[in-house]
Image 1 (cartoon, helix red, strand yellow):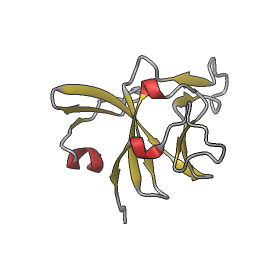
Image 2 (tube, one colour):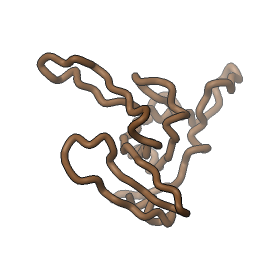
Image 3 (tube, one colour):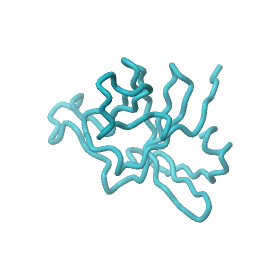
Length: 127
């Protein structure tokens, strides 16, 4: 929220439990629904789960539930790097995990690779 506010977004917090949207933001006349996630640094990638999981429930009908059609963007904070990323949901094609690469792959592949720098919106020290 701090990163978004510093960038000039108006921030609105949905009311109630179990809403699919964590934040609603507005900037330059555009409104966007955000789902906030924590990213973890693993092997030169920021990895986050672009879904809700229900495996911990006694008898889940669905194990993973996508956010497609219910949000517009993921706001991802990686505590190990202190960086915040804003990723449009159209750029995330998986329900298991999504990766933002910090470095290009050694094999030179660029197709279907999401570079973290393209989505980074802020660097924050939280202490």
